[in-house]
Image 1 (cartoon, helix red, strand yellow):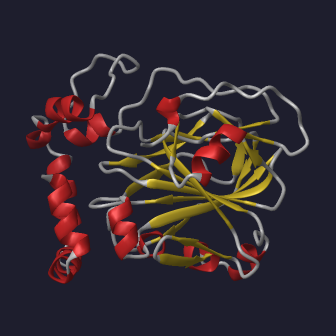
Image 2 (cartoon, one colour):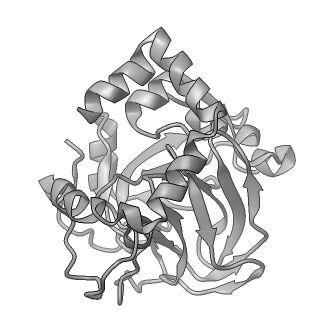
Length: 286
């Protein structure tokens, strides 16, 4: 059913017109109010069953609303402690794109300039020939995200926008990463140089909650979380600061996304030699 609805919204002219009208009419605010109310509690067990969400890592409490359930926090999390190992900030499906000399990159039918994402042209230029990592969080994923290294976080910059879905079908129809609500910040990391992290909201609420600003941080510490709907995290990394593990490069080269978990080792500093973990077929998106 959901697939047919997404096909209508993003693959037909009438559907694309209709979803733009809904967004302009304030549908996200209505949905947010409902999902934050006790009336939404009945959605929780069906959501857990449909998406096969394992609840063993979460405290056994009674959630007062769907929003409270969605933003649930684990009692503990595991992060690769090796300082030369670059860790995933979140659960999700990973893809990677080269940043061209003109500070742009392409995803299927959409072309993005870095200055469209972060509204800072001079800063964007520093990432030419670097790497853009995109982590697409699905409905079943844990929606908190953590720091990938030790370092210092700058100011959070919120850019208001619309709230399209971030599913591939929507990305084919709209340049959603530059249209959607997003928040970016500069992470001055100890081992991988200055990294720009961008959290991107999605249909239909797009709440982004960050817990830190202009302070030091430690690898693995929870940075923030998304509210209510699946979202995306984008990391912009300067040239030759990291190299993805070979098993990840193989999957991405085949045109697939790679399944990652929060704190997982996904890349290393160049010219460092460490045995890579074994490849698992379950990590391919399918």
